[in-house]
Amino acid sequence: MGVAERSTGAYDPGCLRWEERDVPEPADGQVLVRTTLLSIDPTSRNWLKLDPDTTYIPLAVGDVMIGVAVGEVVESRAEGFAPGDLVSGLWGWGEYALASPQFIQRHERDDRIPEEAYLSVFSHVGRAAAIDLLEIGKLRPTDTVVVSAAAGATGSLVVQIAKAKGCRVIGIAGGERKCRFLVEELGAEVIGEAIAEKCPEGVDLFFDNVGGPVLDAVLANMAWNCRIVVCGAMSQYDLPGPEDAYGCTNLPLLLYKCARMEGFVAAAYAERYQEFDDLLRPLYLDGSLTARSHIVEGLVHAPESISLLLEGGNDGKLMVRV
Ligand SMILES: NC(=O)c1ccc[n+]([C@@H]2O[C@H](COP(=O)([O-])OP(=O)(O)OC[C@H]3O[C@@H](n4cnc5c(N)ncnc54)[C@H](OP(=O)(O)O)[C@@H]3O)[C@@H](O)[C@H]2O)c1
Image (cartoon, rainbow, N blue to C red; front, side):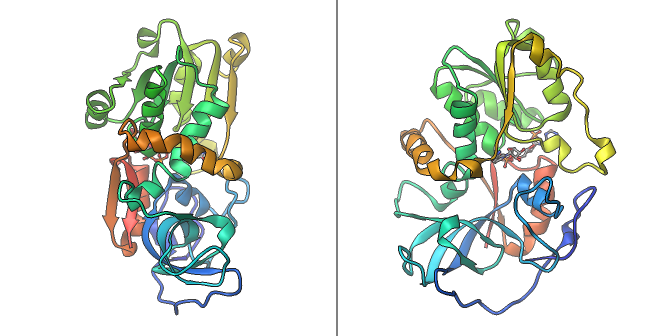
């Protein structure tokens, strides 16, 4: 799948183009992988803006689109990888792709861990949830935690980790179906319009996936020393133009509440991935951490599946089976 054009304004799947290319030959230090699952992420949309200011992956028109994926090594010219190995990491959106060891991880096959989990719990998604909550957010069991896009891939893991730590967790999600999932299956509370009614003492930790007016509303309801961890800004990714960006009016309240707001990308913690995977694995294996997968069949449908994510039409981690 190639990048056909830069995508500005509202996302148009036409910015990606289906192409047939020869299966590439791995050079020294590379592996050839056969992709089985491809992660569809909000950041996929952002990378297609081809804007060095808002993305850290340099893509250009004509490049093969890239993303996080799971697959099997077919041929290896890299130390530590052999044909048949199960791997996940960053490579091109294709049935076959070349990958570099610094961007992939090898996994022992384990019947208790389906391949989908390497795109959710044991990927940038689960790691973002854990790093943001524990490292950046300094989660405490006494915290009242609010999570936006709480029924989504990242949000639902955040809800479960915070609950496992003993916190009171309140989710914000789009629509009745997602709210029911949060209450009935994850044991969280949900919020309507009035944060103040739900959190009369204020919010101790806000895990923000959406930004914009939701962030502004939480800023108005912070507890003393509140921590706001900026994991994402879904509401701001697909605007017609920069002039449409939402200006938060309640930022000065950070001062009066002695609050802290910090953003991060999971990739900045690449050297500590194993540590966070080791923390998440027991929770996953004992069932206290579950991850739903929303699977779209066929690489050809990857471009339009990005729209699904932007419309909130996904139930769980969105991925494409190649
Ligand atoms: N910092 C990192 O390293 C890192 C890593 C992974 C993900 N993220 C971020 O985490 C967030 C969630 O990503 P995900 O992959 O887990 O996706 P997801 O939550 O499974 O799906 C995205 C959800 O965002 C909500 N949404 C979409 N458009 C919105 C809008 N205009 N306003 C408010 N909400 C909107 C929808 O949920 P509702 O229907 O409930 O509104 C949608 O289902 C994104 O912001 C992403 O960039 C960051």
